[in-house]
Image 1 (spheres, rainbow, N blue to C red):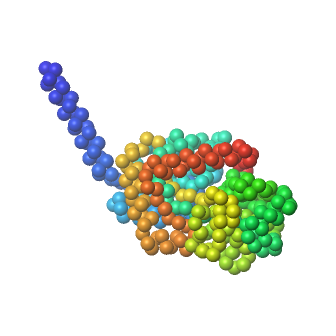
Image 2: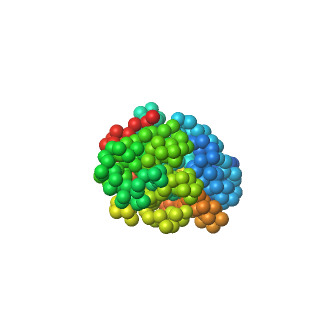
Image 3: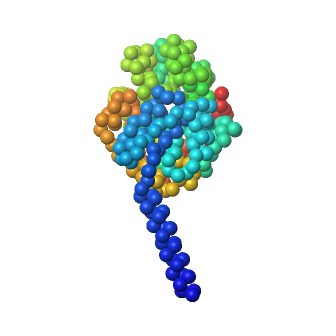
Length: 324
């Protein structure tokens, strides 16, 4: 009797394992959603839609980008956090995802505990630009001027805790200088005042500053990436200017609600790898200063996110960075 019972149990376990395998291999059986927690039309949105289009082809099911913006991406992020971890809901993320919980007490999510990593999708370098009236031509000259006039040079950002604010704080600390922060309510008004001369410098994404630099309304001094930008091959990196190891790009990526099966996340990652390798898509985004990029493993992206979260939390505490 015991042998018979054991045989039945083994058969049931095998049947269950077989059913699980079949279910996973059949994935997906319905449309998949990418929740976009920021306003449509920005870099994060257009990257997500381009990736979704390519992943749709690989999965054989529609991948829909669903916008749920609001409150520094908190609204959409909380929504994705509460979704079933069944592989049919993912969240598109950027630096904001990793940084908000450190400066907003009521963020309502933990980027490392409430979500599982999938992959990077893009890397967007920033550019350090100044108003042409400022008497500097290089990053070294800017640093020298700032040391002569500590706290006098005004820099703009899209707001407290924004990518431009963080980049400038990192730059100031690395260079040993003091700059005065002027936060704006968004990127557009900050650039307008930079062009108008109300502020003297700004760190901004290459993609949005590019038209103003090419038109001569702004003077570019350096980019924050490891390599030079394809849009400005003649422009040195900040690291080349003497600040060794200085890098601070905007990233885009994809995460899933905690508990989403590894096999499903890996399937999506593999499709992202294929998506970012499509020459037409890569070239189209390079023209905007956006480098499409995928993670080599789930663990790699997980480690990347961990560094983003912990490093910013430390900087926010040291620099007293708070949300607007």
